[in-house]
Image 1 (cartoon, rainbow, N blue to C red):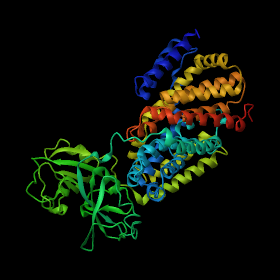
Image 2 (tube, rainbow, N blue to C red):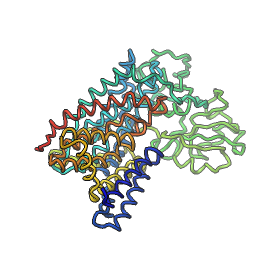
Image 3 (cartoon, helix red, strand yellow):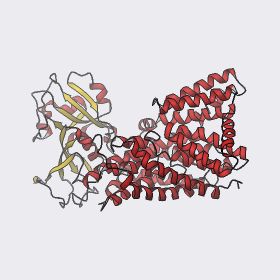
Image 4 (cartoon, rainbow, N blue to C red):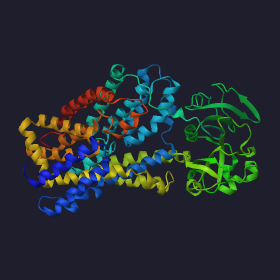
Amino acid sequence: MDDPAIIVTLSVIAASIVGIMIYRLPADVTLLAGLTVLLIYGLFDPEKGLTVKSGLSGFANPGVITVAVLFVLADGLHRTGAFDWIGMQLLGIPRSRLTAQLRAILPAAFLSAFLNNTPVVALMMPIISDWSRKHRVSVSHLFLPLSYAAILGGTCTLIGTSTTIVINNELPPEQQLSMFEPAVVGLPAVILGLAFIVVSTRWLLPERRPAFTPTDDPREYTVEMVVESGSPLVGRSIEAAGLRHLSGMYLMEINRDGQVIPAVSSDTLLQAGDQLVFVGIVSSVVDLQRLPGLKPATDQLFKLDGPRSHRCLVEAVVSTSYPFLRQTVRESQFRSHYNAAIIAVSRDGVRLSEKIGDIRLEPGDTLLLEAAPGFARQQKNSRHFFLVSEVQDSTPVRHEHAWTARFIMFGFVLAAATLSHWLPGSTATLLAALCAALLMIFLRCTRASEARRSVDWNIIVVMAAGIGIGRAMDRSGAALAIIEQLTNLVGHNRYVMLASVFVIASMLSNMITAKAAAIITLNIAMAGADFLDVSPGPFAVAVIMGCAACFVTPFGYQTNLMVYGPGGYRSSDYLRLGLPLTAIIGGLTLLIAPEFWPFEGP
């Protein structure tokens, strides 16, 4: 390995690993910096160095573009609440820790086969948090299994994880996987992996107290919500509707036809037009807005400019310079002056019994407003308010488009699976995803501006830069040099080489994220297949499963990091549960991959 091109390439990769793993530098910036160094070196060594065209080819890679488009698809599902019914319909009432885990992880594994793992976990975490609190199950027994289940579920289809999409696109067209082909090894991995998780967590995963809880926020609001005519909640009991045990919020009373029903019982049946009075924190108000068939009771909302789907929640603290301090909200014509509707007022934690329109605002009152997204920007320097801030992810859910989004998602899966019989897997997935994403926008499941913001550009840059570095490994001969050294250690045994590829992919994915590890390991795997003169199929599958086996550290995958704080976990928890789980996935890969994707090829 005395070739300068090999030395430079491996040095850049080593520096990137150290930067990401030891110094916790952002993966996108680190890999982009490494790609830049290799592009500059390519100017001085045109023969073995990285060319600009080759180095930047990752940004035009169909697999990377497919991942970006799938973010738009997931955004449409999220904004319509297409899968919010899971929390109400599937979780139910657990009878033990084991059944609680199964009810939490099985939906996550299923959804992750068709959606990116990150939004699936983000969607289910608050649902499971509320559900676990209601049934007195520790979230530390649910959140880490939830993350692992999402990762395992993503191995069952071509679109389950972004790494699978990109790896598949790098394979020769005749070797590319179809939509459900990964399930040959992915489905057994899900079954055995989930079985191991629910059986072993009793001993391997101690109960932890969360580092923080969303109910730590002391600011409470009193909010009135009305049950709409035709709502799915009509005729259901308070318990069945999921309104009895709300996280950070409780149902105080119901106003029905002018009569107040206090101390509402769990078996009270809801009727159209019921006004429900809730008391709780702002994050729980956001959750209320996500329930289909409920809307804020104030009629001021329907006099604002633009549809509700174009608004968000904003908190504003009234200042001493507020010009209408001695007038009621109705007299001040607050809606006309600010194009915002007050839906709740918090005053020193004391409930205000008056109707919103009759409240005389005082300095220090915190208002919960529904307004256009530009309200916070327009009023942040206003003397009328001490502080103005938009509540994150508070745009009202477009429940009326939920079935449209579900049909689009079903059509996407069906189209991708059908087209894969005539087109390479990556091309079929990209065409189906583009059509589905455009339908999401045209049919108003999401807006164009929201679709642009939904793309996680950090992930896109990581994958595109990783592909460029992978090209450098090929051109410089670094991948072949690694394989030659590996062969000296393990010999020419195909199964030992396959196991080595899985171990390398798994180790790198736990250290520098799965997406960065995928491209680096794939080039090593392809060089190994060429060196042994065998089909690259089983080696590509080993890379896919190895990069999915990022269970040992909280930093290898986004979902592991997402549950780290809320679950109160320690790094040792990941090691105890993740190491044997990785061994199970590795063993299955070595048994199944060579049988279904033979070394000799088709």
